[in-house]
Structures are given as structure tokens and as C-alpha cells.
Image (cartoon, rainbow, N blue to C red):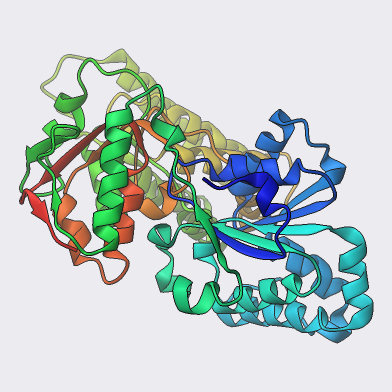
Length: 460
């Protein structure tokens, strides 16, 4: 068993933390030992989760600074630009992020800067270490030369290999941060479904050792399925079950198609990069007239709504007529001023259209908020408005819908009452991290796990 008090005595160490085994609690307990802790993680969602856990344990903010690695590096690199040589603007490319990380690591070699760090912190804790790139590893090693440093993560959740996070724990991490134990208590499933938690833990070990996985285990629900578009799997298997639901597939486009086919019964969630929102904003700003602005909004609506063809033989629907006529009236005003007010009206009415079923509600809501920023003239263009909304969503996080369809990359770190895997066999066809992606997907479930697959046995 890993003990927080023991970790507090170590100069360097690495803890393996399987999904749902109390990693965030452990970080908070170590920070609660006293002194001043710096806790580094990778995402703003991770920052929020750790801060909330610290709050529950009564750890004052002055005793635990929680930041993303990116934000902490930027703070030091731009405070000491001569030593760190950071990018001139905010990093955007992989090369610029590497420049920021390695530049900060280089600056930490200067005595005066090391003294600043030593005066600020008594220990460093690094979360989700499996997601660190080699340049971030160099940075953390340099920090560990200044103050005691503990890294925590799970090699079986290292699904960002495509972004360069491929550190090998035995050969690259443990020589610098000695193995200090593995968390063994499956807190996520205690009081919910301990049998499911046991199956997921057993499956993790099998995946780690390349052993075959039997999906027909009684602790999970297995259904023969020929592909991802078995809608019965998404709905029939969940009848009578309350709580949050996530359907998980590695292909983002298939997630969107599934959400569309579900007619609003599931919602797709958006990437932090908000690429579709930004594409809409650029098309809007390029528009030369009201017609082109409308085209930008309609193009976005095609990404967000499943549109049911209108049947003229059907009985008159006053709700359809009301939404249709209101949207037409709003469209005629897209040329008024900056167009933001008319766009916002059109988008609000689109939600009421009985033939339009919204399946990317977060994206449509972000576009509505961007239009509101433009209407209030808080920004001069739609791109700036969208950037503000994108940053706000990144900082504050999103409220998840009751039923979600998304990828393991976007759902990592979250948990749901029920998880559905529409096509388990597709995990074996991924270019990299196949077993890790499957483990991240199954370990999101707390009460039930339903798996559809064309084959009973999976061999990664």
C-alpha cells in the first residue's frame, strides 16, 4: 500500500496509479502533510479536480500551488526570457512547446532561478506522468534537482503516444524516479459495482501482459455486434437504468455520425482546440454580405443537427412553421450591423425546430455565445469572439450531458455510471496504444459496462 506520509519523506519517487484508484486523493494527502507544494498536471480540468480535492481536505491555497505544466513553464520562461529563450508568442506548434519546456529547464540550471524555486516550494508533485513528453521529462528532472519530486501516473493510460508521450517507465522514468509503489484499492467501484471494478483491474493486467480478453465475462454485458452502428446497443441495453452514460469509440467522425443517428439521444462533446467553432468564425469573418454570413451559420448547423426531411403530406405542424418563419426573418437581418444579433436569434430558433435534432449542443452553444459577444461589441470580429469562448470553456470546463458519445482521448479522467463500447474490435485496429485506449474506455464505467463486438475474444 502506498502511504502519503512515506512519500513525503522521499527525495524522488514514482507511483503507479491505475484508473479509479485514488490518485487525486493521494496527491492531496501528500500536499496536506505541510510545507509548500507545487502540483503540476496537464489540463485545466485536472487543475480544477485537484484544487477541489485540496479544498475538501482543508489544504489552504497558499500551501499548494496547482498549475498546468504549460502555464508554470510560461510563467518562469517569460519572467526570465534571457535564460529561457521562449517563443516570441504563445506556443502553438509542437516545436514551440518543446522550446518552452527545454528553455525553462535550461533556466532552472541558473543559480539565481534555482533559489527562487527553492524559496517557493518544498516539494513538487507531477500528475498524469504517462502523458509527459521527453522535453517535459527533462524539465521535471531539473526540478527534482532543486526540491523533492514525486511523479504519479499509469503507463496503461498513456494514450497520447501520437503527441510524443512515449516515455518507457522501466528504462526512462524509474532510473530518475524510483518505483515507489502501485495504488491497489479500486475506490471508483466501491459501493457501486465492486465486481465490475475487479474485472477492469484483471483486464488491465491481461492487457499489460498481452493476454487475450474474454468479453463474455458475467461481470460485463456482452452483445454480438457487427459494427458501431448497432443503435439497439446504445438504447435497448440501457432501458431502466438511471444515471450518466458514455458511448466510446476511437474515431471522432464515427462519434459524430452515431450522435446524429441517435437523433439527439446522445450528445457529442467538443475538443479543447474547438476547430469546428474556429472554422465557422473564420468563414463568418470572410463573408462579404448577409448571404455569405447565413451560409456560414447553415454550414455550422449541418455539423450540429440531424435534419429530418419535411414531408408536405404530413399534418400541419405549428411549431415547425413558427421556427421556420422566425429563422427566415432572422436570416434577412444578417446584414444589419455586425450581424451578431440576427445570428444569435437564428441560432436560438434553430433549437426549437422540431425537424432539427441537436447532437453537438456544446458546439452550437459556443457559437451562440460567440454571437452574443459580437452583438455586445466586446469583440470586433467573430474569430476574436470565438477565441474568448474557447478560452472560457478551457478554463471553466464543460458540463457533460446525461448521455455522451466521444473518444477515449476526450473522456480520459472522467467517469460515468454506464459505459457502452459500440465496437470493441475496432480498438485492435488503431495505429498505436490499442490496449491503452481500450483500458481507458472500459475504466470510465462505475455501475455497468456494455460491450458490443463481432468477436468474443480480443487479443491486443
